[in-house]
Image (tube, rainbow, N blue to C red; front, side, top):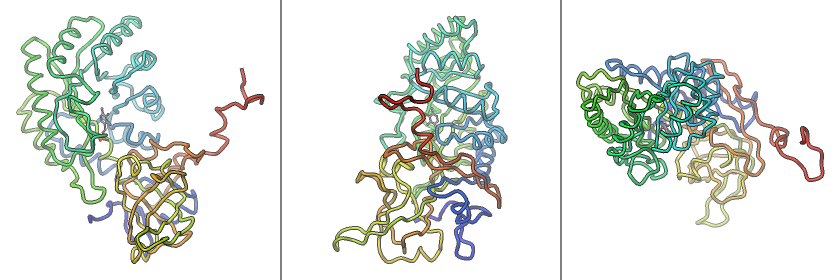
Length: 429
Ligand SMILES: *Cc1c(COP(=O)(O)O)cnc(C)c1O
């Protein structure tokens, strides 16, 4: 098994994130709580910028991985742009103080309202995923008397060798268009005065651990770039998407430096700006989900697991249930690492699929605090109110201080949107 993420370490037997004792966070903020390291996020962004330092490039942080305003503001301060997939994400990015001109808009189902919002805000590019979308964007631009900047998302038919749910670059997937189709869309866009072609993009999947599929995708995009140039269509940027993999258990993390050097080599002096859309690789290992053990349930039989029932559940972190994802579980007391019994760490939700981790050799007792690591990406953003559980709070650690960047949801927050038959809800029409 690999080492825990860099931002976590035991100091005198207590688990710290950077300079902060996580037990102090649990005492102040309660559990379950998502806790993120500002330093770790900054280091990842800086590392990716360094890896591509020799190439004209721009990082667009993929907001869907973790869309907390404080994290978006941090990314903005470090100079990244943003890759969004909804109007809601555009609102978040603008609220965080980012410039719309640093935003690119991906996704297969952009609505009229979302397109209008993005056009009025003045985003830098629409990553177009189909012919009907291209037509809609053109119509909306005409209607608003704007020119829409567009890039076509190409599906390079490359196998990212990742989990089927997070693979997006095969022709079976719903994303992007095939190369020949892309050429037709570019010809249409070039002839359309409501559209301005800025680049080409792809995103072949997530949690990709080797550079090969990403470089193969780049090579296929470059063939198209050259074909387009031969037709007089010149692109300013080439967007390679995100998908850079990280270590959860023993997976190889994608090597930023190797990726950057290989891209530079393949570009061979071309002038295009390279766009990157990293999400997971920036925030996954920056975050933990803090949780407290409510009860322990010893094994019912020799071949049955023992359960540690904790106060976090699949509604807080769905990755284990959804993708059989593995997350490390670290007791806040280092002594808890030395257990002899394998525990299944499970939540209170009424589903057998509600587990956080299985068969972990730990010493656990009721009331112990645990940190579920690598939870910074696709954790809080996929949280739900299933079982009418209120969503966790979020805390940002900055050196040896921390602050809450999203308060814990309350039951009043949950009930506010609903109305009782016969009752008189607030704001009833
Ligand atoms: C999800 C997504 C990303 C980010 O993927 P990661 O694996 O988190 O880096 C980037 N671009 C697009 C279009 C996406 O859908």
